[in-house]
Length: 83
Image (cartoon, rainbow, N blue to C red; front, side, top):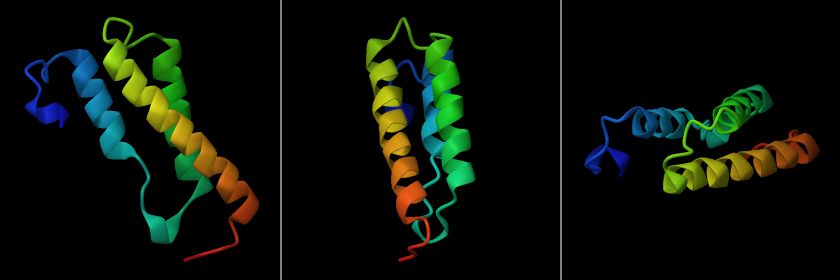
């Protein structure tokens, strides 16, 4: 979706695109370390205000960050369960 945006070559767009590509979505190999690493990277970029000039991009990262944090909580409780 971001690759079709007219501003796709701007640093903020590249940054979000990179984060979205790195989301650990391997359902058969859920790894708390991968989830934690990714969420820490999101938190770092949000804290450094990488997306301050682009509220829509900031919200995309926040929503995904919140989702990953919930998945981390789920894995802490049900990490023993494999689909």
